[in-house]
Image (cartoon, rainbow, N blue to C red; front, side):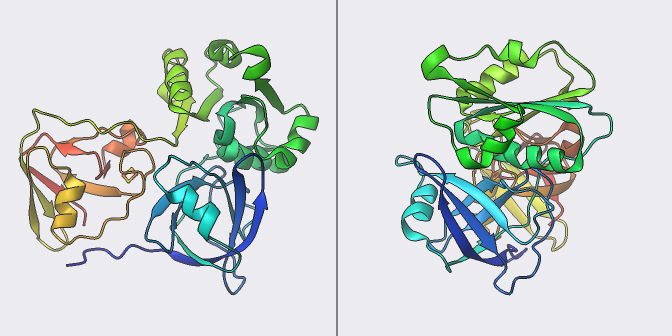
Length: 318
Ligand code: FES
C-alpha cells in the first residue's frame, strides 16, 4: 500500500566546486533549464541520491537565484555515508531527485536586525540569508562565523567579510568566543540564529534561554540520539484518508510502524531535526519530541520519526 508518493523534482548536477578543506559546492539545475520551485533564504532540501540515501542540506544561494539550488557538502569520513557518496560518486550530469524546499527565514517586518552565529560549515543557511538581506536592503545583520582556522566557502564569504558583515572568530588563535557576548541582551526587534555542531547549538540554547521563543532560531545538522521512552504505551495510528489503522507497539517508532504497514514516508535525519517526515494530525494527543516545530505548528503537525502518542488513538491527515 502506498498512501502518499514521495515527491521529488528531477535535477542534474550542473557544477561542482571545491570550497574549502573537504567541502564541495554542488549546483543542481532543472535538466531543461526551467526555474526551480521557490524557496526562502536559508531553506533546506532533501537530496535523494542514486544509492537510495536521502540527505538534507541548506541552500547557500538566495531565492532570487531561482535557476539553481546550491548546497555545500562537507565530507564526513565517519558520517552516515551521504556526504561520502556525494563527494566520491557524484559527478557533473548525474541526476539527483530533490524535495521541495522547506524552512528558511520568513521576512518579518518586526525584525530590525539579525545576529547569526555559525560554526564552520553551519554558515551555509546564513550565507543564503545574508545574500538575500544585502540584495533586498532588508534588516541589518551580523554574521559571527566560528572556525578553528580555515574558512569554509571563503571566496563566497569574501565580499561580506570585506563589507564588515561577517566577523570571523578563529578558535585556534583566540579560543572559543563567549556566545552570550556575541548575542547581547534581549532585544524584541532582533532575531538571533545559530547553526553549528551540537555543542554550539546547546550553548546557544542556554545563553538564549531568557529570549522570547519567537526571537530565537536554531538550525541543527546532527540529530540528537534517539530517546527510547520506556513508559511509552502501544497505540493505534488511523489514516484519515483511507481509514487504515496501524498498531504501534510499545518501544516502536510511529515511522517504523507505518513503514511496516507499507506506507511510504519521506525521511532524512530520522531524529526530528530536518522536517522531511512532517505530517498533519487531526485527533489524539501527540508527544512531539522533535527539535524543529514551533508550538503553533505542533497544534497541526508532528514529525513522525520521533513523535509518540499520549492517547490510545492518533489520527493522521494521511
Ligand atoms: S526524518 Fe528528519 S524530522 Fe523526521
